[in-house]
Image (cartoon, rainbow, N blue to C red; front, top):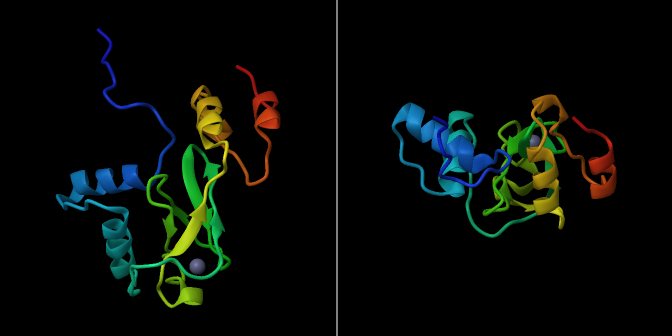
Amino acid sequence: MRKIKAEKEHLQTAKDLRNKLNKLTGSNMQTHDDLIHKLATQNRFVYVPGKTLGKKVYAFVDHGRWVAQCECGGAESVDLDSPIFFCCSCGNRSTTGRPREVIFPKEKERIESILLKRTDLRWKNWKVGESVESLEMEYSE
Ligand SMILES: [Zn+2]
C-alpha cells in the first residue's frame, strides 16, 4: 500500500531544515529566528533579531531548495513564511548581525508547481529573473 503524505508537497525551505534538526538533535526550535540563532551561534556569530536592515537578498531555487546568497558567497536556506536572511559565512557583517529581507518571486507558487513535477533534483532549479515560461520550456520528462 502507498503511504499518503499528510503535508502538501513543496520545495525545501529553512522550515524543513529546522524540523530535520529538531528531529536529529532533540531540540525544539519553533521559529525561523530560533534556527538562525542556533546556526549563528554554532558559527560563532551574534544574530541580532528584529527589523530587517541593509540590502535585500533574492531567493532562488537550487536543487529543490529555496536559498538566497550573500555578497560574501555564502548561501542559506530561506523560509517562505519568514523572509529573513542571516549569512552563516560572514554573520551578516554588512548589517552587524541584523537580519536582511528576502525577496521571493511573485510567481513562487507557479515555480514550485513546475519544479515539483520534476523527479531529478538536478533539474529543480530556478534563477532570479528567469521567466516561468522559459522554466516550463526547458525540460520535459
Ligand atoms: Zn555573507
